[in-house]
Image (spheres, rainbow, N blue to C red):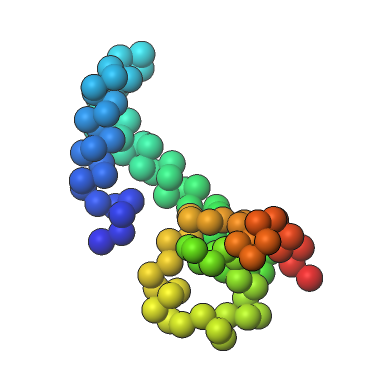
Length: 103
């Protein structure tokens, strides 16, 4: 199960919202706000993946961005285990955003 779709994440977010009475301003139950926040995270993840594809790269946790043309060096296990929302745009080799240019 994906971390974002787990019930424990949803429950934990709802508990934190409730603990801080964050639902009071909108008069919306905490579990509905938690579902909304999870949906926002999932939408952001999809946007980040689309951006990476547009720039011609694959974002891999702990390795930064790998150009798609270099994907032959990345194993299937690394791709399946990757969480695309981590290390987005981070070039771990030199700590810069130098790989933003898709050429």
